[in-house]
Length: 74
Image (cartoon, rainbow, N blue to C red; front, side, top):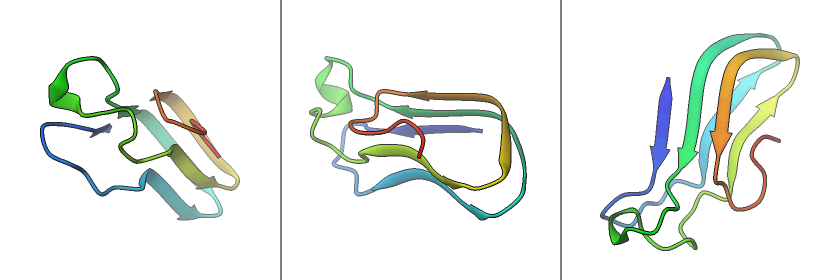
């Protein structure tokens, strides 16, 4: 699963992935906040601030999280 935040328009997402489950497995996920220099991805002040949240007793295989402003995974 692939999440990309950022683009030509202003986004309103505050989180990329929230897992509201106390157990389980997830596999092959890439959470990416576009923060590169081209104007098409927007300024670095764009949300979301954190990548993944609420992973309680969740096993993640192949998790890639990049370029979030505060935390990659909580």
